[in-house]
Image (cartoon, rainbow, N blue to C red; front, top):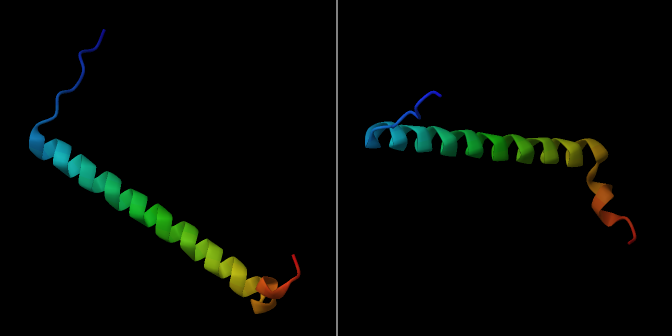
Length: 50
């Protein structure tokens, strides 16, 4: 059995910062794809009847 890795507080903080940065980039990418999809479909896509 391999013993678990114990991170120092500095390493844990750096890991958390990286995770937040990756999450923000993922959200930005999803938003970009959404905007590109709406632009390609045209503005009238929001005017269709429900």
